[in-house]
Length: 240
Image 1 (cartoon, rainbow, N blue to C red):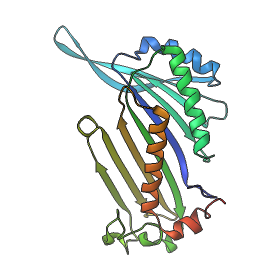
Image 2 (image 1 turned 60 degrees about the vertical axis):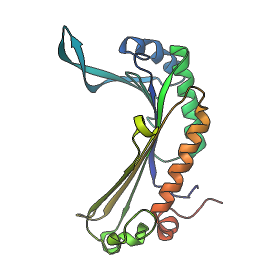
Image 3 (image 1 turned 120 degrees about the vertical axis):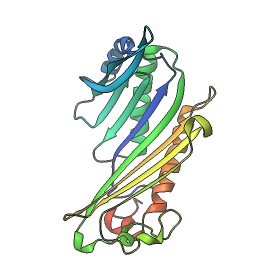
Image 4 (image 1 turned 180 degrees about the horizontal axis):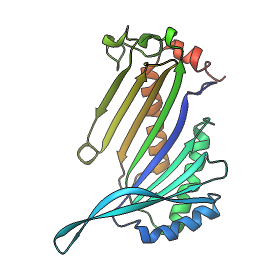
């Protein structure tokens, strides 16, 4: 569903590649293709630590990630070890805009690497909104007592967290995580909704169809969390 004032502030897809497919040495094969595709603002950032075994000893090594932005810094691709990420940030222009960005990034990845073998795809969304503290009660914005949120939160006006998860990717082929964080210690109240929909990829998987399915499931889950007041008064109602 599309709303006049969407609360979605970031959408991104993680492509997890087969081991040793995208090493740091091969970053230099991918980044020039991304630059050609319009991602011209390049920065190298630390990504964390990995462990290598050398002569029977574990040796920590700092890993790197390359961020490639389009001018305006709302469209981003990230290149990491066996990981490729496409981000759309800021005011949400709609799902088709993200799909277009995803396809451009994916084409640049394939142009740099050649054949790409994927292990899994993770679609992540982040929604944020603020409301005056004097107006806030959980049940006004979140469907307490519905299919996902316990009624225990109905009259809640203080800060709280809700974390839901199901499935183990390596065992079940999928993982679902939803995190709701309400910070009501100050005015206004800040609400953040983050959802991860992660599926393993088979050799014959149609990636575009998989992405569409994950998007549909993400939308359905978000709708199950919110109230009509949220839809109409915060998000401005549906686009006709």
